[in-house]
Image 1 (cartoon, protein in one colour):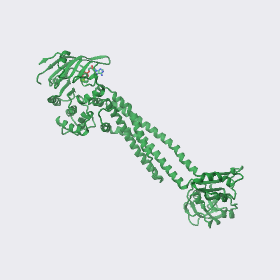
Image 2 (cartoon, chains in turn cyan, red):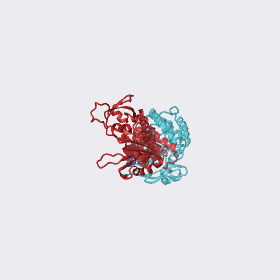
Image 3 (cartoon, rainbow over the protein chains, first blue to last red):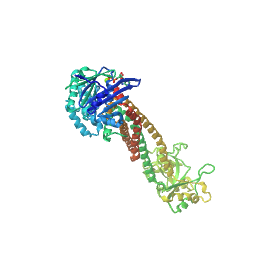
Image 4 (cartoon, protein in one colour):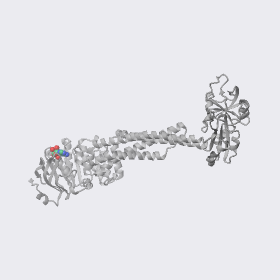
Length: 242
Length: 395
Ligand SMILES: Nc1ncnc2c1ncn2[C@@H]1O[C@H](COP(=O)(O)OP(=O)(O)O)[C@@H](O)[C@H]1O
Ligand SMILES: [Mg+2]
């Protein structure tokens, strides 16, 4: 167990391997309220990382910044060494389509659409034909253990099954980074454990997994825990080997 | 519309799935457009069908008929034309047929017990035996006056006259009382669109009128058929031919003008209904805009999710625009079909040919799509402007 100081020098040192890097990131919401006070964080390819902290500490804000869904007020977010503030809406969209996969607490599945078509939407904005998307989606559902529920609408699935559909969708484009915001927050203990196991497995493909949670037990399932409190990183712990 | 890497079929599919997820709402919001388009298409279809019927009638009756009447005297009574009028007109080169009627003072009754005042508006006239040829008329029942029957107390009834005298059907041996004499009814005529006053007349032969009713053999109205190309030329010389001394006492007219005027009247009537159709379309367009605005508010998280999946602002805009266009397009197609059914029903009951102008069909769908684009534009722009984080935060 080792504690790494999160300062710019350390981040720069590992820049060649870091897939995601936050440099002195601050975020101020209208009010004005600063909710992130200079975050420095470097995430290496293939890491399994948890960002853990109490409700309101700024975790979701951080995930939105890392996911290019929002821009920092000051500071930089670099993905694969690219400063995302320099990108246009189209370029950011392409980034999200190809490099990033999102999993949310609320699943965000489309109601009127079958499980397989919900998953297929993971490649909707990547220029892949419908037939190919569906074939990949069926394989993806198979992989998360839902090969028998392809044509079910979300309303007929349990919470755990819905989240596995959402994970299959996030993985469809084979993103380098998966960002999950409280992925177990709406699930019972057993389903939550299944979902976490699934997210851990991803890592065997070299996918970087970033899980945001208020639950220390969920965080413990990841190799590295970054603890955030009131918009400041208070500790950054790596359990070697995982 | 910049739509990233999304193909047209994917854009349409995404839009359609959004609508199919809320089928009742989609149907209701397309309804306004459907009603508006149905109104426009059926008004245009019905008017085209009835105009086609009028034009066909006009073609059948011909526009080469001229009507010559003596002008009104100072006393206001219509005078007769000179006895020479018909032979003189017959000598004009392009004239094909000359016929005439002469108004008589006698009245016609079903029998001699009817009080003399109850004329029912029926006029007794003397008619030439070639009147039907000149007016392109025909008999409903029985036969017209002939070279034989024009010399005897024989009468032919106009369509309205027959009704007013109570002849639902003509029976051989039916009689009418004219000037105290029983006249045998030879037949009943079809309505005469080119000479509606004949419908209200009872016609007897010129020789009989002169022998029994003291007529002088002069005509009050002369009907002239000319070669079609020379109608105007003949029309301009008729007054001088008939009455060289006082040509301005002669009235020359072209009865087909009245039918042409009816075709034009139809247009004025149509604009009223087209105006109502336009109002329905406007309401339909506002309805779609309204539904789309609500839809954008309700589907914030879907918009946020799609942005997270890599949708550009353009993709989101195209999605909502395509929903509006599909709604309006479906409404437009439904409206066109409904309008054609209404037109079909109308022309089936009227026995006219079915005419649905292609311009009404194409125009109806084009108007619907244009309305959809206008109605969908603002909601689509709002959806595209939504920040992904705001869209995802709403629960
Ligand atoms: N769009 C916003 N406008 C204003 N304040 C916000 C906005 N989003 C989040 N906040 C505030 O920022 C703080 C951090 O929120 P969030 O990042 O969601 O924390 P967490 O995910 O750790 O619960 C909270 O106090 C929240 O109220
Ligand atoms: Mg949160």
